[in-house]
Each structure stands twice: as C-alpha cells, then as structure tokens.
Amino acid sequence: MNENYYFRNKYNKEFSNFSKINPCLCGSIRDYQLFKYDRHEHLCPTVLCEKCGLVRSNPRINSDYMIDFYESDNYRNFTTSNKTKVYSNYFRTSKHIYKILSRYIKPKSEILEIGCGGGWNLIPFLRSGHTIYGTEYSKELKKISEYKGIIKYDKNIKSSKKKFDLIIVSHVLEHLYDINNFLNNLKKILKDDGYLYIEVPSIEKKYSLDQIQFFHNYYFTKNTLIKYCLKSRFKVFKWSYVLGIHQFIILKKYVGYGVHYNKINEVTKIKELHRKYFLLFYRRYLFNFYFRSLVKKLFGEFLTTKVKFILKFLRTSFL
Image (cartoon, rainbow, N blue to C red; front, side, top):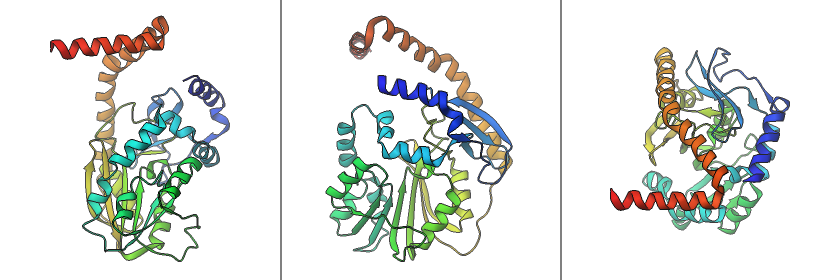
C-alpha cells in the first residue's frame, strides 16, 4: 500500500513532465471534461470528444513512460493485491473467449494474442490442438506464458510475413495510442478468411470512477468501438456484451466502408450518463470513500478488516 502511495505522489507531481495534449482519433480538439483523477487518485484528465463522442485521456502519458510502467510490472500492483491468487483464478476461469470463437475457427489454426498476459486466454486453444503465439510487455508474465507452452512472438508486425487464422486483442485496445495504425497493421497479418477478436470494457455498462484508470487511453461505447474498427475497413462479424461489464467484437477483413453513427446522439448519451453518475457519486461513493478512509486512520487496516467482517456477518444473519 505504501509503495502505491509513494508512486501516486511522485506521479502526480511529475505528471506534466511525461504527458502531453493530443487530439482525438477523429482529429478534433473540442473536448468536454469528465474526470480529473482516476479511482486511485492519480491525475487522469478524461474527456469526451464533442465531435465524435469518443471518451479518452487528455492530456495523456507518453508511450515511453507507459512501456516502462508495463515492463516493470507496476501495472499489476494497482489492479490486484495478490498476483499469485489472481493469476491462478485467470487460468481457472478465462475460457469465455474460446467458447465464443471455437465454433468459427478451423482445426489446427494458427492463433496470435496481442498482450497475452500469462497465456490464460490461450490455454484452451492450445489444448484443442491449435498453434499458439503471444506477445507481452511484462517480463514476469512473458515467462509464465512461455512456461505454459505459448510461443513468443516478438517480430515487427509491419514487416512480418506470417499470417494468422485468428488474432485476439483482449483488454489491450484501451491502453494503446494509435488505434488506427494498430488495426491497419493487424489487418496485414490476418488471413483473408481470418477473425480478429477484440474485447474492451464498456463504459455504457459501468459508467463509474472504477472504469477510470491512468493507464487507459480510451473508453468505448458500442458505437465508438464499431466506428473505429470500421474506419480501418473491417466488417463486424459479431458484437455482444460479455462478463457483465465488458464488450467484444469479432471482425473480418472488408474492402468497403462502414456506416457512420449519429455523432450528436453519442455525445448527448455520454453527457447524460455523466450527469446521472455524479448524482449518485456525491450521494454514495464519495461519502463511502472518505468514511472508509477515516475508519482506517482511526482503527488501522487490521481492525477495519475485522469490523467489516463482523458487519457483513450481522447483515447476512439478520436479513
């Protein structure tokens, strides 16, 4: 906890040194401010593009800082307090991507996952006889994935001649900088009859401070996700919600152009979500946040945990 506290203070103090203002993917700089800090109180200016409706970080951290952050494994320190337990749980439960895609892909396909973590999404494909490749920034997770049998893929996508039957991009797109260029490069290594699977959080399903994280550059609705996938000249094979608060899209190659959505409606929708969120936020979330902080200061971490356990027990016993 102290490590994260010192990181946050240093990060906030030096934010202007490693961040810069960037236009939206549509090129616009007309922004509407949504949030200033993320859920961990890191500076994370989050805005709504008033031209296309995309939610993004602006100013945002530069890519060099972010790569160092991922490679140092600090990312996992903010997303979990017990990495070993979480990794084990991922390997036990991360089967939904296989269940979604197994009906579409051919036997003995060649599959690549960008940002494969420890390989948890890929293990079911590996066990079904497919040839599996993965890329990963984290040194720790890279070792785990290789131990599990995932072939390390560290070639430059732009110059690679190898093509894949399926490319998986799960909870990666929101971290990227140049999404248009990224998708165009993936198209080069995807077979003509191949599938591109993308999974991202849905800001429509859970519009709250829990979604806002300084290592996220973009926050997608269904419409903005589809819009920027179509811009790279893919066609939508399937789209749906998954795991309660996330969404996935399966894409195929396409030579035409997609249909654009109503930009005004998209902007209006996000502003209405934002208005409703803050009505609830100031009533409940903010009060609970500072109340919990006060209790921890008064009683310490250990006693606070015990009190929470007792209150939970009493609630479940008498309700």
